[in-house]
Image (cartoon, rainbow, N blue to C red; front, side):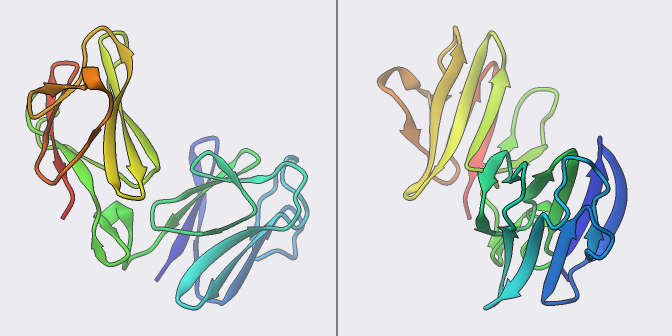
Length: 193
């Protein structure tokens, strides 16, 4: 069952199961999820289950609602999305399609897997539109979700990242399943099942 994990300043304060079709979030006590912070409007946002999707909608709040750092008015939520309302962070988890478990919409989530270095074996799920990897000052790359797939680009650093030995000197490279990325002395495998 989908659920929300509510934290304030990094401390988890409550977990809420989405077991009803409409759930209100706000500062006033009549909300289903009360977020007792001054930057939160009385009736700040609502989460509605409709047509098999979970939708977040801002209710004209004063300070806005953000999902993964982007301001939103209305948005379909995906497992792993982080909703920021004032100083409150609400993480949306979906047991069926959760990015926490490596799935998006019922299929395995795209990811990069570290294949060399001290973090060998660790995986980074690509659930955001833009993910940065690398070592600041040495080499930092971006993996950007596009309509046609994922693209690796260089953000910063003196060393150019590479894909299968081809550097990004000519611009971003579209990633394919099992491509090997080298950035900042670390090798990663791009996995898009």
